[in-house]
Amino acid sequence: MRQMCIYCFKWADIDTMTPIFEQGRVFVNYYCEDCVTAVMDDLFKFPSKDGLPYSDVCEQSRIH
Image (cartoon, rainbow, N blue to C red):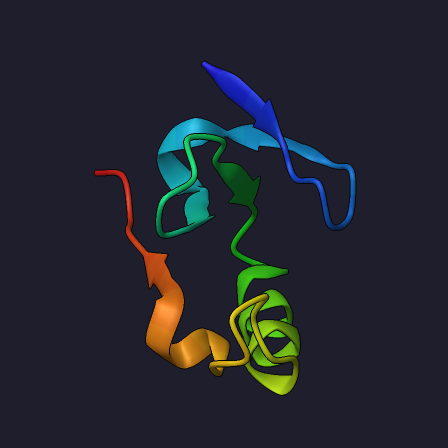
């Protein structure tokens, strides 16, 4: 199965993509291997809606 990376809009096999989601949310965004590092760096720069850093509220998991 293939999924589109919402950061670079390229299609990739879902087995090679990283899902990232905020705790308490159902919707998961998928990022390709080329973009996941940049996305995580960007997330950690901004505070969450609760004022906490995303490093405290963001979970990352890998599908394999």
